[in-house]
Image (cartoon, rainbow, N blue to C red; front, side, top):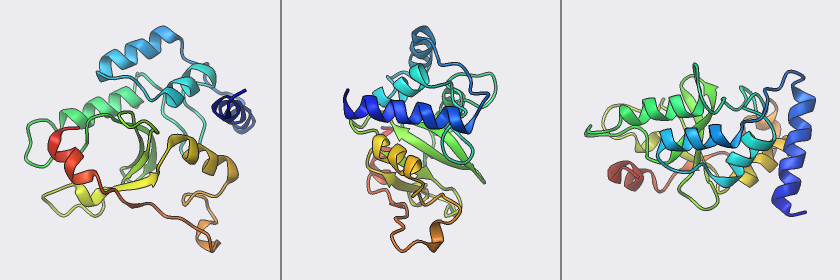
Length: 185
């Protein structure tokens, strides 16, 4: 068993213990449908979670979104945000970053499907004051696997008692925001 296999298994156990009504996993055909709509492949670990654990409904706070609609879903949220970012002077949402959950108040966690490690980003629109959206993007975790480990350990910045800990690591400004927003990738 690889470290990723072990991680997926631990996520599945936690997901089942947190939610007795977990949605069914997503079939390969539906993952293919989502990737066709997105125009790129999902990060491999994200695809495995949808394929092997459930169609959302698990994870921190508001939990992972379903992969496909109806309603709010990974594909719908991504396509809506990208459509609003095409052909405008100051794009809001970079290509390849799929929103996987909402933190409320228009904040999202997103997985960068174009990065090998699947870095996890925080989109927090409150710093926006017109012009560039760069200040609204933060690096939450350098890898999706590490982000999941943080959730499993209960040590994320998003945990209820996080501010009481001395070892709290908060998301930092994403140094690729300006280039990714300006190039469309």
